Amino acid sequence: MTTEQLIENIKKKKSFLCIGLDVDLNKIPNYLLEKEDPIFEFNKAIIDATHHLCVAYKPNTAFYEAYGIKGWQALEKTIKYLNRHYPEIYTIADAKRGDIGNTSTMYAKAFFEDLGFDSVTVAPYMGKDSVEPFLAFEDKHTILLALTSNKGAFDFQTKAVDGKELYKHVLETSKTWENSKNLMYVVGATKAEYLADIRQIIPNSFLLVPGVGAQGGNLKDVCKYGMTDTVGLLINSSRGIIYASQGNDFAEAAAKKAKDLQSQMQKILES
Figure 1 (cartoon, rainbow, N blue to C red):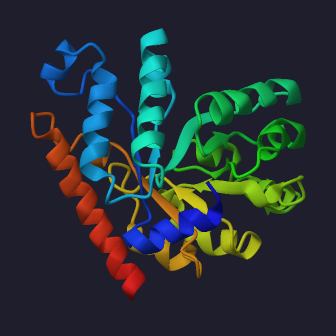
Figure 2: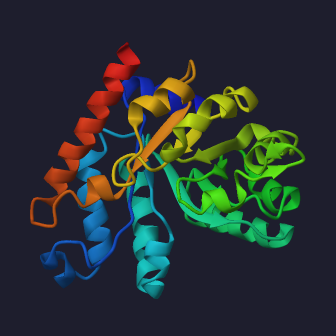
């Protein structure tokens, strides 16, 4: 999917909501555990109930890999279901990959070609040759970890290196890489106060912003400092939406939470 197609869908739905599909079998309704593929059945119900309210879905691959081959098959079924029934939806493999060049190429093939995701999250620590293999894929996006929402982000990301925070070096350096037009960036909603500085470096790039909802990020602050003329934001909420209820009404409850966020986004867009 191209950036232009994503922007068009944001305008159409009046939403820049991304829903994280992080499935924990200990948190889904008990009756689903009797199904042949409870992970996929949970995802399918969430997707069918919320697809009109969001523009993206983001499965975190750890929640699938933890269940072995059955979990990976559920991930494959989920992305195929999305691509077949809701092709306008932008898909993000939250895999946080990144390795030496030939290994990164194989990771990119796995997520872009085999599974058919539109984008994948990538760690920048190993530098240029670990990221450019992902950037080589046309109409696919590489979402680089820039400033994350966890407490440990302060261990390295905000430390000064040659008088400048490390995350700023990452942003500036990444702009010099081949096909850097295919980059997006992860910036946590709990770091909203940093967004003004970030936009000085990457004024037009899309940002994937996790941390709204269960992690306490503030939507208005993120939009105030991070929004561009083309919105430039994908706001992710995972637990706050998909686990709104653990009863048989889980999909309806998820839709209600998604609608609350979408309505807030619509007001921001219209203002």
